[in-house]
Amino acid sequence: MADMLIIGQGPAGVSASLYALRAGLDVILVGKGAGALEKAHMIENYYGLEKPLSGSELFEVGKKQAERLGANLVEDEVTDLFFDGKEFVATGLKGEYRGRACIMATGSARKKTPLPGMAEMEGHGVSYCAVCDAFFYRGKDVAVLGSGEYALHECNELLNVVGSVTLLTNGAEPTAEFTDKVRIDKRKLAGLVGEGTFGGVKFDDGEELKLDGLFVALGSASAMDLARKAGAAFDGGSVVLDKDYMTTVPGLFASGDCTGGTLQVAVAVGEGAIAGLAAIKYLRENR
Image 1 (cartoon, helix red, strand yellow):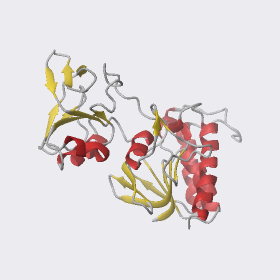
Image 2: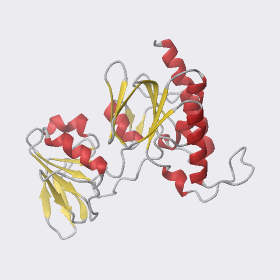
Image 3: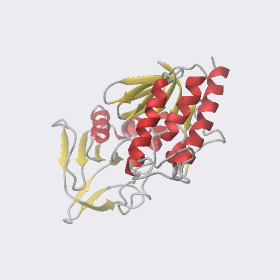
């Protein structure tokens, strides 16, 4: 267990870690890849760069800086996050990570598939958290929308509770090893069916599949997914944050692209600094 658990190794996460490390705190930085930063060909509009750097180069420099100050860097994909009353527990594909405070700096949320009816049925049969909502579907037929490790995690959570689980890949090939208890349907989706409440999905071929619930698990778990799992409050589709980027769960912060707004390295670094300093203060006040 560390004093501070930071999920994400990009500009926001590393920035927060630098303040925590210099304050004498133990820090775990867990993350997978550079995310959107990796797609930046050359960065010239960031203070202090004598010459342009690629996003990948800046990502590696940041990680080395945190490591030099003593951060424990772990390469892993986090699929779950909860607060047990004393500490935050993040579950990854390779292990479990704990911290007395947690900063989510996972980058911008991945786009959800814009299927007709998806937005209207959120909370009415469409969910983004198997751990949170599996209980409501005991013995019922549900589906998971996705094809990777995150979808696998949600399927495994649901299999312990529900009647049946179907994986809907929406035309994609599965990239994880799913148990034969999960029925896999690779057909393209045309939309959701139901009047106000989710009733199933419709495929491009016109066939419908009746379901009681749909769990969305596309790509990797975003900060919004993790915030839901940890019990943070939302206003519309955005997590509620105070001026210090703390959620409604004491000790749980968010910073960087995952908070929305201007998606720039400079902004992410600034938000990481604010969240990092606030998390330090929180830990000192709650020893």
